Every structure is written in C-alpha cells, then in structure tokens.
Image (cartoon, helix red, strand yellow):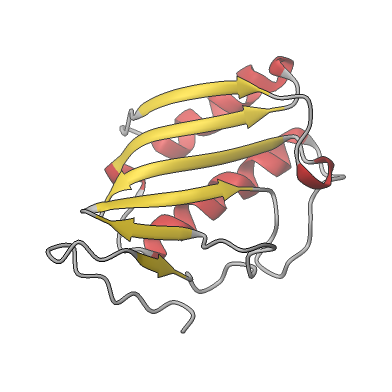
Length: 137
C-alpha cells in the first residue's frame, strides 16, 4: 500500500517503501528499501509527483526536484536528510557541479554525509542529474 512501511529493523527484513506523494516508479524497483537499520534510496530523477518528466527544465529546476524526491523517499521510509550516510550524484555535464553543490548545501543544511559525483554521458529521458542515497532508518 502506498505510503505504508511495515519494516522491523530488528528482524532483518527487507521492506520496499512506496512513499506517498511520489510518482509511481517507472520500472521494476522501489523508491526506497529499508534493511538492517538503513534506508537505501533508489536513483531519483527529476520527475514531479504527478509524473511529469522535467527533461526540458533548466538544470537547477531538475536538481531541486531530484532533491525533493530524495527527501520524500527518506521521509516515506521514516528517515530524513539529517540521517544521510552517503549520497551519489550523477551529472551529464560536470560544468553543472557548482550549481548542484550550492543547491545541495542549502538542502542538506548541517548534514554532511559522504558524497560522490559521477559524470556520465547520459541519463534516462535526457535528464541532467540523478541522485541516490543511503541513510540510517
């Protein structure tokens, strides 16, 4: 059921999370999975909650939507930005890194998880940025 999490971190169960207010995944995956006291957030693309793909939006708008999606997936799994452990960012143009870093710093606030940036030749639907993350549950 969307938005319902039945995880039990003490049992070692792997539980898929379908956060409310997020577009349905476009493939065979979950937006987030909890296991062993962690939340694993799948690569989030700039897709609005209503399913609108922001491929034609400017980089900054795409980045804001991706970060909002990561936050929604974390919240749906009972976690939050302040519990992030690692973040991986994929960008199609490394020249966008300074703009992303500024948006990310404002979004993450005092949280400073380990982070990597990976330049890639292309992303699905022609998007410019994708972010995946790991957090404590």
